[in-house]
Every structure is written in C-alpha cells, then in structure tokens.
Length: 533
Image (tube, rainbow, N blue to C red):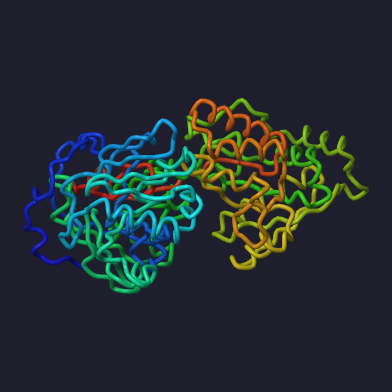
C-alpha cells in the first residue's frame, strides 16, 4: 500500500501562515528530514473519521491527525496554543475569549473562522458530545465579534473549561461542511475536512485508512511525513508479528498487551514510549458494592485494601507498566493530588485484625464470608488480576468467585442490576477531577442503568458538598484544597480501592523520531519524521 508518487515531490514549506507561539508547540528537532509514508496500526477499525461528536479511541487515533482543537497539552500537561493562539478568562469566570490563529485553512481551502468555533461548540459539543453535553452545560452562547475572536459566555464559572478544549477531547469542524438538516448524519457520512497536518486520501474498509500530507498546514514546513497508512489488524498476535518484521512502524494507545510490549521493546529496531498519556490518568481499581451488608462496613473495605498485593499485580500481571497511587486522583495531576491520605500497605495480618474487630471471624472451615468478583471484560489481564485478588483474599479467609461475561452482561450486572460484590475496572481521571473522578463519588451520579457511573452506591453528604463546591469554585487555591479534602474522605471510606495508575504504551520503530509531543494520547504527528539509521 503506497500513496501517490507525487506526494514525495511536493514542496514542504507551503504552510498558510507564519506561526505565533510555534515554539511552545514544537520542541527542538535535531535534523528533521521530510519524506516517508508511516506504516501505523489502528484498532479497532473506526466507525467514522470525525470525532467532534463522539471521541472514541479507534476513530481518534486517525481523526487526531485530521482535526485539531483550540488548545493542546505539552508533555508536562501545560496548556498550549493550537487553533487558538491566546486566550483570556474573565475575572468573574463568566466569559473566556479565544483569539484564533490567522491564516488557517480547512483542507478544502476555505478559511477557518470564529463561526466554525461557535457552530462546533453550540451545535455539536453541547448537544451530541457524551461528556461535553455536561461539561459545557453552562456555556450559554459563543459570540463572534470578528472572524478571529470567539467569546464563550457562561451563566456560572466552569473552572475546568479550558482543560477539555484539546484536539483529543473537543475537535473543531467546519460549519460549511457539516451544518445542515441532520448534522449527526453529516459528521458520520461526509468525508473528513479538517485543519490538521494530514488529510484523507482513501479509506479501504476492513484494510486501511490512508492519509496524505496537507500542504496548506498552518505550521510552516510541517508535517514532515508524506503520509500515514493506518492498517486494520484486529488480532493482537498478528499486530505483534507485524511490529517484529518491520511491517508496522507505529502504534499508539497500547496496540499490544503490556507483557508483549515489554518483549517487543527488547528488539533492536523497536522501542516503547509511555509518555504522552497523562491527560487520561487511567487508574486500575476495584469497586465495592456498598449495598452488600458485609461490604457496608468500612472496616471490611479497609481490610480488603490491606490484603491485596498491588505491587505483585503490577509487576507480574501488568509487567510493570504502571505507577503507584494513593487514591482517586493520580499523582500526575500535581495541582490537585496529595499523598497526605490514609494508606493501606500490603499487610494480611492487619487485614485479619480489622475483620475480627468488625465481627467477621473465620468459621470452622476457615472462611469468614464469600464474595463475587466481576472483572471488566477487556482482555485476559483483568481476569489474571482477579485471580491474584482471589488468592490474596483466600489468605485472610474470604472466598471469592470470579465471574466472567461479555461486555453488555457486565454493564447490566454492575450498573443496572447492582448484582455484584467487587468489580475490577478502570477510571480515567482526565486533567481535572470534576471531569473524571467526581462521577464515582457523587451520590447524584447513582443513576441506575448508566455505565461507569457511581455503581458502588457510595453516598456521603460531606463528600457531596465538596464535589458540588469544586464545580464552580473560581479560586484555584481554594479549589485545590477542596480536592485534597475529597481524597482524604475517599481513602477513609474506601468505596473504591485504587491500585495503580496504568501506563499506556506507544510501540514504534526506532527510526521514527519526535512522535510523542503531546500529553493527550492522540498526537497530530505534525512534528514526527523518519530518520534512516
């Protein structure tokens, strides 16, 4: 599979505008060379190639090269300019003014303007986007006093608004392409037309999505690559083999399992990158059903925390691709994280003492009580983790039954029927705890039938008051203090046992340089280039 030969002879310095703020986006490059069609992998195959209304993983791996957001994140999780070159937040928090980058064009040559931002925000993000429908509920209008100014008007402060305007979470699309009687259908059925460094050349269903370099890209001289072929390889073993043989050169968001990535990283021509995913802060955790008369006892939940050997799980099952955490907010969110919380080191003796004190002694058969454990059906590592937890709890007299099922059954059992004791799953904290963490600890989010809501049934008026206050608190210091209080309560009550922050992996050929420049997991690859050894 190759792109048109003419691509290789195109001039590289044909960007539409001179950048303002480019240095913040572009780390120093050694000697970037133009050329090369990158062989990448996407899994699963995208259902569509525009993610402004539905930012799902497979689609985002491709669409993030075609579309952009107003802002982006550097690798230190600092917001940087993208389609907006600068912005101001009003002192009262009731408006945010974005000054858009001049000279940006859509792939069809039409100019990018504030009308596109207003259309995307009001007609797509606020109405169709699964998270932004809530996140932007207090955005009442987007004013466009001129073509390069977009002013978001709010009816109350939304302190996390800026954190969700990156290209992975909130893509901007052209009004002149996707507006009409049925916007949702247009987003899915019409060809993707973005401002990004690559544009669609061909989509061979079931085989590959082929992108070519957009010569009119606003970053001068970028992209360096001539194109990207996203191959569709559903089988993990086949993906691993393709990396080994050099057939594949790039795969993001853990294209293979952690232990397979560890093995591939030992090859001379392959390397593994774990940076670039801090936007998600994904935590591996165990949710406990507090409706159960045994798990309703806080001391029992604390005993479970002492009984589980999280270090062994991380090293033996996840091959070390993770970092310890002390609670629901990952250490990467330095503005909000605190380690000054109750902790529960691996200590089976302490666990047994807590269970005895709570009134659950061992019976004649050595068993205190029985539990069920439903691992998230997202691969064998979840089941293997459940097996370790089963053994850990057996050591303190708790008998565990592991139940495996398909995803629809799992979701119904956990979030509709509440027919579980323990569930192993994941949480993406996202760059602000209100976005990712709040939903699991707020009693207002106990919504039967809604996946990944507050399935534990946890309700604490003190926690609720803190979470409500953080939604509108406009003072950063006060808001950070509220989240520190939240973590102390969470780690005292323990409706959820947070084991470790998972590390996603990027598998790549060592000749590919500068591929990881953003923290939101979906790099544009505008800066990437190929360097022959």
